[in-house]
Figure 1 (tube, rainbow, N blue to C red):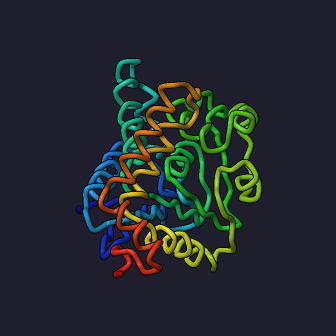
Figure 2: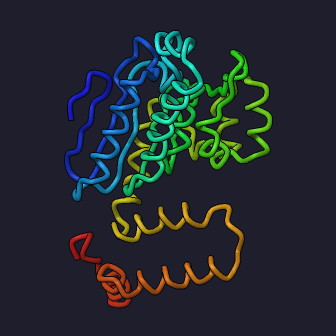
Length: 262
């Protein structure tokens, strides 16, 4: 797909979506939101793609809302704001539910709505100099649309602090809260992402997709009879699937499974 705001590369099993507006710190506008939504929808539908990396150019990963977009929103009615926020919510949902595993490659600062981009990805690796901030309260707003994903990523206790104070925190704190999974020096960022990709590409493609859906379906739910029944059905389904049977047989026979060329 073509876009003036991002690039999409899908050669082989890894697709990379890169935000390419360093001059505005890769900030959102309605056009950017539409293109990110289309990009994740497209890569999610490509059979050969088995993992997706979300990256950005320049010193910032994403600074939230573009200033011109914010100026336009300042005069919106409540009804117009509902429509506008709905588009952002749909972008976040598409990233979060993308059938392929996703990795945020965070090379620089992440502010406000940009925090939602990182939180919606399955994994996040950050450069040590990256800063993070849920700055909405500083301008009289709240991080409402991104909150389901950010709270899942950092937990309610950390969210209480950083939603309410709007203070900036560093990559080490993002790691401590669980918002990112790994922090490395900038020059080691690609190597860290490649390490995660190696694990993802060595696993059963069907099992990886099923595991992603499993986490989304199970997280936060009460352990009751309905959930237990769903998980029993889930393991029965995967055991009886072609890849499930192949993986077990390969393990028992000490050979590579078919998805690794066995």
